[in-house]
Length: 180
Image (cartoon, rainbow, N blue to C red):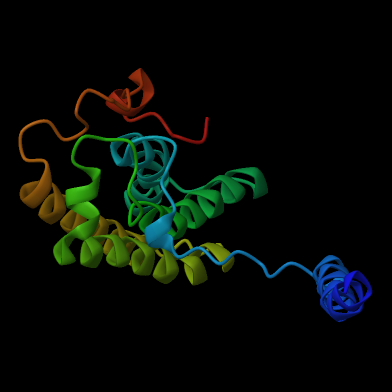
């Protein structure tokens, strides 16, 4: 009887060993995460001040005729344009802020965020061409202002950065080039 039990369990043991070996040999499936599952390690406000505010300054500077003077300056503008493209995507993800979950769930928020990305994408050909077409840059800057004002009116009318401020420099207030 014992021999019968052993013989009857051998196929089960072989099957179990084979499945263990197959599990070890099979590559692990990549974990797929959607943007909805990713949480920023900072608040959306911090991301906006750190990415969007900073990059907007360079776009507005060129639109106001403060033209880059060398390749380094153009690299700064290019980085700002990339930041705008990415920033619009980043703020579609919930962060650590008090209202972040509400904002990213709102279709108006998503629309304004996507518009930021499009504004950056529309500025990309200008920066790649090192365009000194102030009017074209101004049009990009005007769209950026309109987008920011419309979004802030809906979501942050009283304290735009909720205490996270992008400090104006003395140069900017005196009209001295951002590229100095």
